[in-house]
Length: 394
Image (cartoon, rainbow, N blue to C red; front, side, top):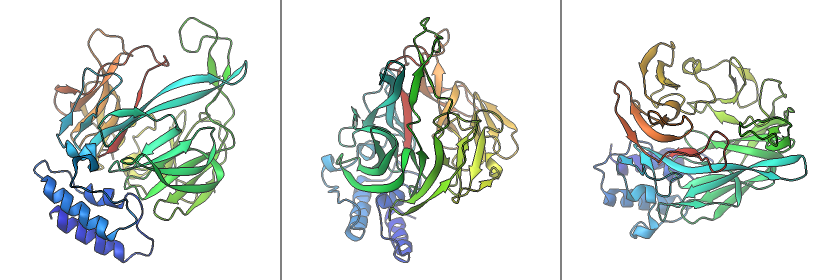
């Protein structure tokens, strides 16, 4: 099936449903199948034009001009690397996955004994292919296709979620909520959002009289031992409608412990600080068992389950997602994203280098080969300026 046929079939299916088309529909159509490097730019333009002509809810893009095309579409190389850049300045991507944004953290003092751990984001500019500072937002997640981002304003928790057009840089729509939100994540297909609600800002930090970051100074901050989280919304992106589920506070979690979607998007989960490390819920807030291929996942390993659902990435290993059997050892550690069913993006430290001076690399199952994507980070864990990647499907 070619791109034109895929678009037509998807439009026919969408036309039978009641909800109006919303932001992200074009993304889902054009990224539903693996990007083929032999695909011509002309077919992409034709497919995009066909969708825009009917799905008027999606912003119109004039695909005939280079300036109107997404940077992630203008360069469809399998690997786009900048191993000399840390933090990155130019687009980094591999397969269908791209570095959509990254952020740094810093403590901003509010009083003599209290601060807020603020995230400072750099977001991919889809016109230039460069990462630009996005100071307006306290939290960002990017939808598949990288045309839309869900954004939260400063002063968390906030009572509206913005849908940001990554080509125009403008918020196209605000989704109001009744309870304060401090974290938001797209579902794997981009159709839904899970928004985590908190009574107070989960990023508040309080001064402690011990050295928490190892810099030899007893003037550090630590998170509150209170858990301000109280539940989550599951929101339909197209309509902006959703429902809130209360989730009682627990002792086995951090002050910020956001919800995210399962691999198939049918459940949400939250991390725990000890075994079993993850608790799953249905969309009504009821506790459920881990999915069959989610038994060996951990919330702190972002790689999770492979695209085909058969493998799971751990630190330096790849396991059978259903049995836990070790399939292979891989170089590096802390899996961040699957490129495809055989390749992973992980953090990697060069031999003899400080373990914290790590870089993004691609590792392949069954091979010692690695491809360097970024330059190495500087400083130790928690040092100012250390950046954290945010990946999305391009």
